[in-house]
Length: 399
Image 1: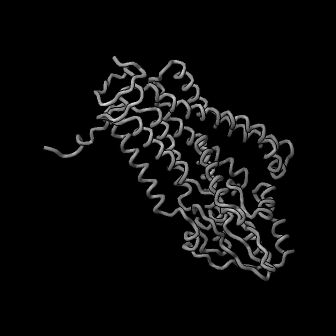
Image 2: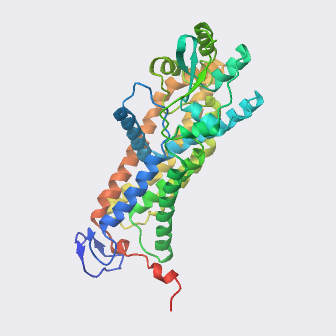
Image 3: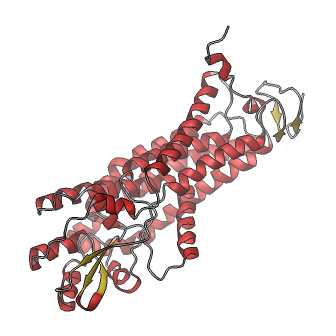
């Protein structure tokens, strides 16, 4: 019988699940390094390549852009299902935007054009070569009130501004597929999984959802597409920004447009009520698909009973908190609308009331951080069968 903290090296591996082992290295089975490395690479792809940040400001340094992307990657680790919901809101908003543009005569407008607008990808160059970022509402306002029609923007020009292309997304999908295939082999041969692998499977699930919603969104674009309109005066542009200031976006967004020439990485592309409808429809599905993998480890053999109990509590909270948050979000908006009798005024007050709901969001982040710490700490003593390798030769023709 091996000690629970024993390190295995160049020996036989006991496959009795009641036997725990410590760190494994250089043996005829997979090592602890192999396990951790495979999970880390897969999770890195899930949290890094899936990012679709806004076009940076011309004054932003490379280090600032990298730091901003790293911050969003950290947020993805803390709450990967939240990123999926953001992507879903943008997807449905982009689809509605395409319909609106087609109705206004922009038959060439595609999902890529819409997503690029959400990233602050279009800059209007007007009187005296002044510049300001324009989005959906501004472009349509200019056509309706000034008769200014944007010339056709080829989709290949938008794709050329992105650094994350179809090849990068394909490589990511290949790595995810490889990891899923290896896990499928372990399941078929009834081999144990580590908590790290279970957590990685949950990340893959949300990443596939996010990639689906953001498939047509350009990635890592650093240059904006100029829309030249030298005949437009500054007073006209000011009027345009004023008339479109509250079209489904936070009030402070105009400050970003003017002063920093960069949009926040999380925009509100559709009206608040529509965004909540998206959350209500998708939040339970995303939370369930993400949390289901953690529930699969409900009976996992933890190093101590206390860790098992805490992990089970974390599973329950990670599934319940998103639903509670969405319900509270809807409740606050409905109460504001009922009290003030105006959806528009309720929307303007809603962002201030979100600070009270942020407590639940921080609690969710703490639960997620506990899970991430536990999967690393639990490697000190795992079921020995975790390190058994899949016998792929049994699936190949042989004589």
